[in-house]
Length: 351
Image (tube, rainbow, N blue to C red; front, side, top):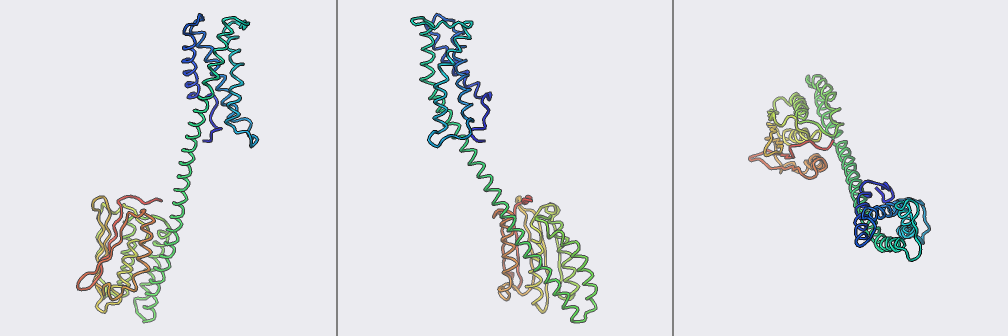
């Protein structure tokens, strides 16, 4: 809210003005023959007029000459308002006949009211302006911080979508290459694998486009993928998948688990003449989800040069999705094999 957008007679302003005016009115009534209530009423009338001038010239005119700051204009108009407002207060409280003649007690009271108002009102106005500017500065800083956070979120979302777009063709081309290998070899499994691949892609591609998916959905895709791979190399691939029911509804970036499993197949099982086994385990531990994929393939040392692209992209996607509160760890298993483990918060990622 800009300083000029506050209501002139907002309740908080009226309450403060009337309280201060009543206090000054009470002080002026001490030793005064006029009833305290009348003196207080006069002070409140003057205070209300000052508030009107303070608020009116807070908004009007919209444009001022460069040599005239709005704060100076408001203080000048407050000073000009006080004598007329004091005259109005005396007129109202004396039935329209203030009798401000030279030497009269009313003239003395009028002069005191004007003098006290001119002495204190500008300083109170300056304090109010400074407080108003400080509040405006805080609001502007908060608005800027919110805009910056929103901008950073949009940038992160854009980067996440870009990285996800890089993962999709990587996975699809690898799978299609596997089917091509079967066709080239004249395998009787080629037609069956191709039919399974079409059915799998029909279900998997829409999930790839979303920014978040459940672990239950991830496991379904991984199971279908491993079934395809097992058709291709039935004598060299075994797998077991275990999903903790508590972890099934949790959210993660799409293709997180699939990336780990695909790397295990491509860089662990495929290069091994004997093939191997893949164990997929997902569970909840200490309010965090643990996703572990182990294979008994050739291991890290043999194919370390080929593990970078998919997993480095996955690391970046996890960082964007969970704000750095996720880990991806790789360890070698003796005598051969690799364990890939992802740990992330037990919560939904930003949609």
